[in-house]
Length: 124
Image: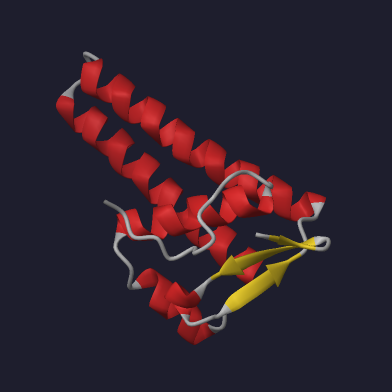
């Protein structure tokens, strides 16, 4: 939800109520970087599932891509919401799917795209 020149995002999932975020260029870059990581993982997983590379190499690449996505997810959420140590731990206790859904909702909100008002939408 947009309020003046700020985006209001419900971050109750990590122990914050509604957070007001000024959608600056720096935050937009972080949002785009996160969304790019998510898209790259989807492409890589599709390629690996259809590819002919040895299984061990596929598995290593898959693990690396997932690890990079989780790191990018945490960095994006922690930086944009400026989470405390306790809030970071609460976020890291979420399932992988829930943390990615939360981060996608946050990235869409700061980019002015349609996103649920509540950032704590659970994954299906």
